[in-house]
Length: 133
Image (cartoon, rainbow, N blue to C red; front, side):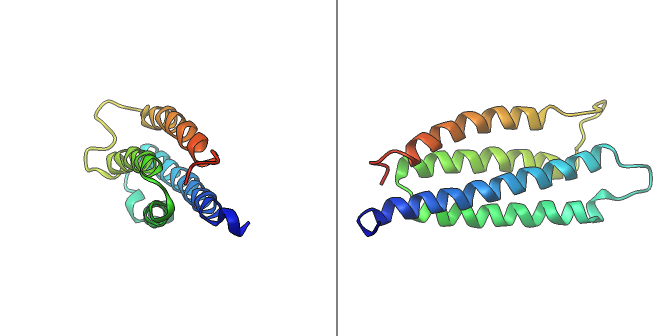
């Protein structure tokens, strides 16, 4: 194991990053649903789901930075692409213009999932190669 310590660090960092990404997606998705279904007079931006969304995004940001410390450039590029895709969706959900006028439900989460699936397939292959480090 000590012979492959760098690869072990890479896989461990990837697992932590992936776990935080899943939590952040779930939390932001739940918050997005709460915003879309909010009743008149209820402020979803001051509830527990909004706090979970913010906290999980910050944890994902830290996990991304930690993973970037042990990952080679090709993996860092993929990780940053995944984080940027998530962050774009997060920013839209938190924008003053959300939800878009006339919209009952958004397709952002489905679009995000499709883009993340493509990026995570790529990163998974690279992380699990013997020569990834």
